[in-house]
Image 1 (cartoon, rainbow, N blue to C red):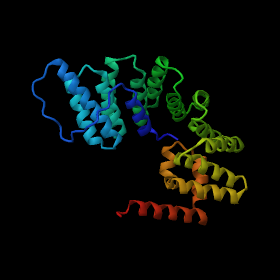
Image 2 (cartoon, rainbow, N blue to C red; image 1 turned 90 degrees about the vertical axis):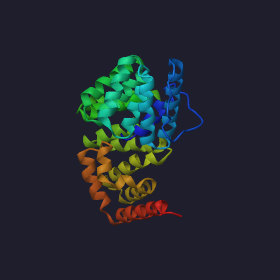
Image 3 (cartoon, rainbow, N blue to C red; image 1 turned 180 degrees about the vertical axis):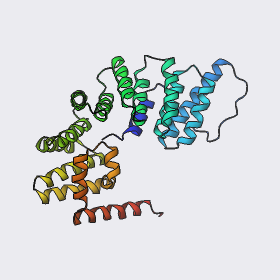
Image 4 (cartoon, rainbow, N blue to C red; image 1 turned 30 degrees about the vertical axis):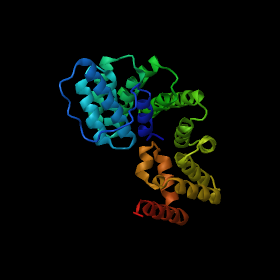
Length: 294
């Protein structure tokens, strides 16, 4: 499980101290000559609008407003941090890093900036800088479960599996409802051949999951259960996982979520089984119906 950037981005924006505004002007406003207090007020208004637009997934409009805000209040770290977060959510990694570096220079003791920067470097696959940035943020604000989870992911992608497990365990210790670290420890254990431990961790993850994200540990558990010989239970779990979220039938998507080679190989074979093919076809059909105009 890695792809939670949009969720993390929204949480960080809402914690950034920028007041939300009740109205959105969909055209970029023309601004007359303004004094410093008016510039600050207009800049903060634009940031509030950009946050609302981001929550509506309207990133182009949100970025336009955030960029204008950085011109009005260029010494405000929130403006650069919001812009960097928007670029990150819109998969514009280099632009995100550039904006976040400016935010960091203005406010080096703001942990949220370091956490976003760590996510940006992770997305760029610069895992050493991701680790460095996340560690810097955690030095300012320790024991943040999401940041610890992200650090564990960076360790995992750097091949530092022992560090990854220790960091995931620390993340889970902060919030026992935050099951994602357990899921990823399961991924590591499966690759190491400890299928029983992976199954135990994925069962805990499935029990804790309350939304469609639970499809990931459920599918992993399905594959492992099938491999252990309980084929009927494995197929039932697999069908339920695909019904929750059929994206997990896409091998590329699984790789993006840090599934290792051994689990990928076993999952490919599992998804070729007739019942799983039928479940995937049904999932695609349901998705198409939901997208079709009424």
